[in-house]
Image (cartoon, rainbow, N blue to C red):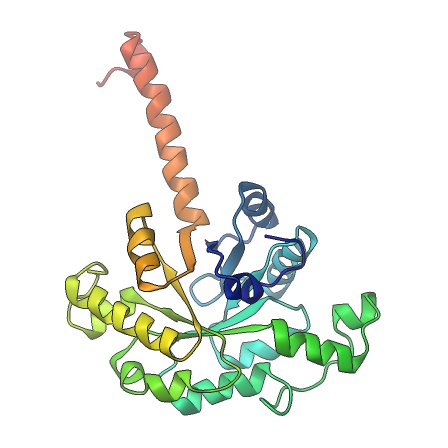
Length: 266
């Protein structure tokens, strides 16, 4: 990704973007994601316990390495303190109505799209010399609002939700959808995948960008054929655990093949 280019700008050009879900409160993870070539990261504040200082350090690191960083918030009241740290996007889970989607837009967008308060102490104004007017225009154009559609009530109101100006992206949540549809824990059940495809079609119909989690290259290919260009392809904690286990197994197998008694089963 070009330095300074927003995720939305890249997607408008039809370029595929690949992101990493972050649950570890370690700035080095953001740096490694950038070095590995990821296009964006998403801090999962909904499911991981981050303190304010840890969250700020993650966002600072993302900014320094030029990595667009979205934050999935646990609730709407957490949005306002985040905006001054200038994340690339705010993701709001469990959006089930036009009213809830409107509340997200109101919190994130300045007038006339929303009702966001003006903070005169943002980094771009304080450190880069942006005027208030320029900063407001910049945020209106570059901040992504991602609504997560992951329930039956949300699907019933999906057109009302996605028709709102100010929303730029939408995500699914197959884990929660599997529960809603009566197949708890079966994220790849045909019924769950069918609903996800329905949501993707609706997102594209409304001119928004779907951002979808994919566990394999094969799934990325399927989603690409549906029109998806933005993918979440892994979680830092899971990737670390997998690689650590693989590394240990490789070392043990090497010594077992050499007949080392220390590694033989008891």
